[in-house]
Length: 107
Image (cartoon, rainbow, N blue to C red; front, top):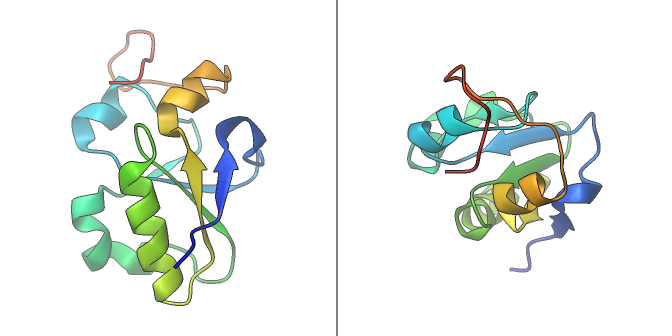
């Protein structure tokens, strides 16, 4: 199955952005409007992912998000992988926040 992919710089500002990284990665830095569901929890929490709109899936570099996007598409959802992940997001100077009180970074 081919998974659609988009560059981080091209993700729409109003997109449903699903971050599937682990908690430590999320805390260090993430997109302000992203929803965090780690890849290891996605099967049990899939109902938190909208079925009526496109979902953009992101991880650190694109591997985990590719797998999650493929799985969501297999379920009949409309999922797009964010190529290059949060590293590309940061490289494109897209907004980021952290949960640490320190400047955000991609862990």
